[in-house]
Length: 329
Image (cartoon, rainbow, N blue to C red; front, side, top):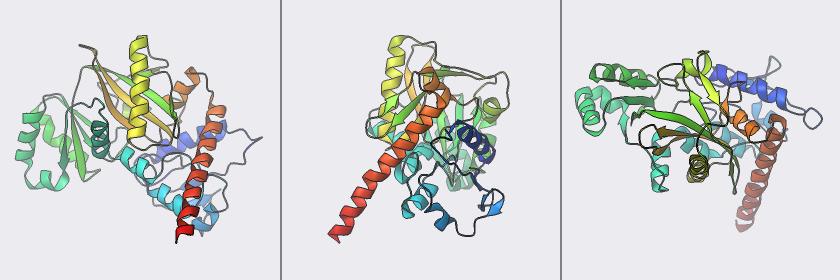
């Protein structure tokens, strides 16, 4: 828990909820804190050799959000250590963190993705006016400007007019060298939880009602006016479509174990757009992923059981492949 990203504090809250939900008759959990500076400790004592310590674990729950935790880096370390872990592997985690790559995979899989453009920080810093002109030719206001590799809506701005576009791009550039700029919609925000490996299942969809103009970091974690509805008050047809698209998005990004898939449902016309996938969604008391499964009949302790089972299952499959490669050599 913790980690070096801007979502360090959210990770701590998620991890505490996971620790509280684990059945002590089955598990002996140990909390490993990764500081904002990358130092590992257990019960306040530094880990001198995290590698050796990891290899003593039966399974790891990387309840880490954002870069250096959810983007494939910690997953690569766990793969090298040959330790079972919960969630997507290196490829799925990296694809789920990078909003540009993720959207390209969605498009290749034939999923409905709203109009967007990629902007690279060197391009913006070298020639800001041509970048803004390109965005205005391709997209209409409002736009959403986002760092490509951040979560929890960190660094995101809703841009209503040209005078807001430059500051929004500059803000996003503080957090990443690659940005995505998306077309804004007058839409409802729906979310769907996915659980599984090769044959994933989707929960009933939920809805986010932001207390602010959009669901930014403050709206998610500090604004008492924001609400979540689980399940969402949508038609059976929309619920079915959301669940089908959520599974397709999960598979398109090579996800495993768990993910939350976010959607926009346009208020005019009812068009459904796949927005993004989150490969390690929050487990805080207000987070949608556990709420959605609870509303679908799967309480947190059993959900955690299932996630651990899926992590062990995936590790066994990868171990089989490792042994085959060793024999070939």
